[in-house]
Amino acid sequence: MKGRPKMSERKIWAYNFTGWVLFTVSAVFFLWGTWKAADVIGIIASLAFLVACIVFMIPAWMTRPKPDDEA
View 1 (cartoon, rainbow, N blue to C red):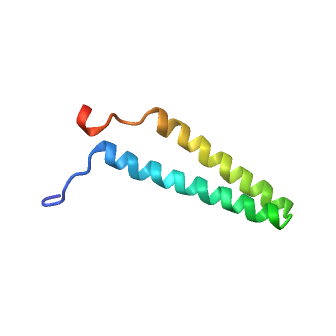
View 2: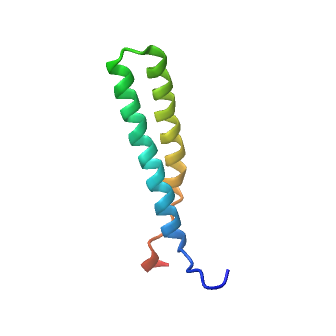
């Protein structure tokens, strides 16, 4: 589109990875809350959420683009 600044591949990756980090942090807090409440179903769901976030982060980290100044 005309007039829209383009984002670099690295910047797009940084936003996406930051989102996954925030999801992971929220999973930890959900796990903590359900642990304190002794909610077994919540603990299982929170652990599944945490593991899923980590699984998504691994390939994102392994295929990250080089910093913009090295491109």
